[in-house]
Length: 345
Image 1 (cartoon, rainbow, N blue to C red):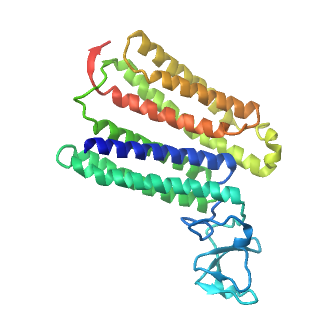
Image 2: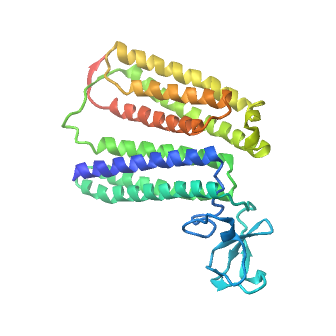
Image 3: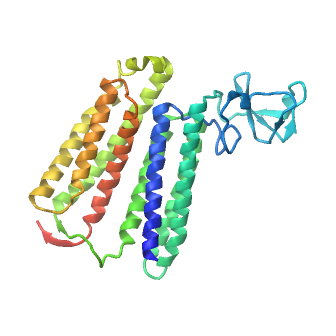
């Protein structure tokens, strides 16, 4: 039964990371407002594929809550009705959450897939929470943490709605990303404490300095990610201003945040090289340090590619996802460092 809980929890973790991937694709394609309402998309559970579905027509039935675009505004059907030969404004109410009224089928479906992935992750987390009751007599903390994750997923969904209503407010986008990483950390912690520690547990040598530097490195990664979301917001604004056809001009005059973000990566890399060398020198046993350096390398290369080669396809997604994976691996190494302090360096 505990094995099943581990499988459910790992599934939830994978799906949460898929949500991060989907969110990165949304940012890469500029699809954040692909669905201008929430939780539906233009009032539909399955979004439209053609602008004609969002236009008023005579003798057409509209369900309550369905949306049309008219006079560059969003209008919501007050009730289910069939249109007459002429438009009757009394049947519609103006959508007042924001004034964004554009339709791009690609953007709509990219955002819809993002939301669908989020819903699947939410269901997996809920399944994990129900499965956690099997620990009622042994580790009640697993139950509390599992239901905390359910709450965080709900809060994350609400944040997603506020991001849409704010028309992609940069502070809310940053908070959205940070909460996603918190969810990853909590699930990883649940995975760790729900393990049967009596079997096949790797031995680690305990090094106080190494453990302290792991925490420091994790903090650096989190700061770097937060700064990265701010740089990404600048890029989004420039693309909106200049258009995708002029993407080569986007980074001609970057903000100070970009230079800080770029320089900060040197500190992050140096810190983790020190950790890697110390782990190897004293045979501490943390094999995941190789993954850390690999992800850092991938993150830096994708960052260089974005700046020097005008944002090649998937480079933004790779940049965000590698940073998120880096955070998860670093946090899990901290959890590993808590166990089996067999030798002090």
